[in-house]
Image 1 (cartoon, helix red, strand yellow):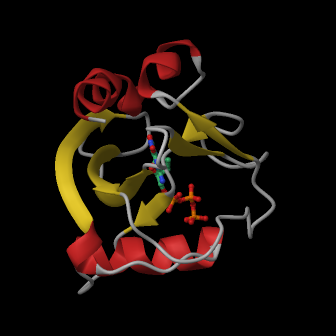
Image 2: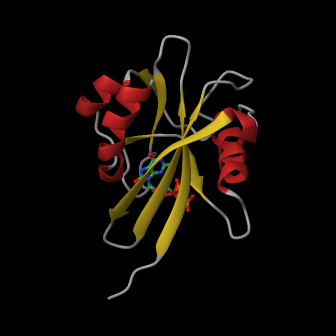
Image 3: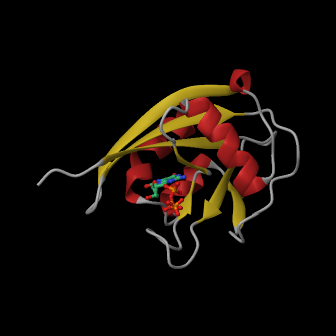
Length: 134
Ligand SMILES: Nc1nc2c([nH]c(=O)n2[C@H]2C[C@H](O)[C@@H](COP(=O)(O)OP(=O)(O)OP(=O)(O)O)O2)c(=O)[nH]1
């Protein structure tokens, strides 16, 4: 049976100490409780960068620019209901202090520590790549 493909942009926001921001998916949502890279679905007609800038503003209250987003990796994962393609960007420059605008908990983690954090299954292959890069 064919499933829809959904396209998601997500950010590895890296602070000066090389830690990356993770947000906890709220109760009641797909993959509730797991720690994800902030971001979300790309709307039709929207570029991946602009979708991410919009999501970072909505979810965390921070602003950044396309020029501060470096594409570093993608993930491709088969969930029960859809196939996910996740585009991961590294971002080291933004304005504002990230806060969970939608009530989500936030934490900063070094990539190496993410192997022991409950992250969505699609994200697992991204951890090693991030560790080599950050
Ligand atoms: N933002 C983000 N989403 C991820 C990651 N890994 C992963 O499997 N996903 C999945 C979870 C969701 O099914 C989808 C992201 O969609 P979303 O955050 O815009 O959607 P949502 O479930 O909050 O639903 P909606 O109410 O916004 O429609 O991608 C990740 O690291 N970051």
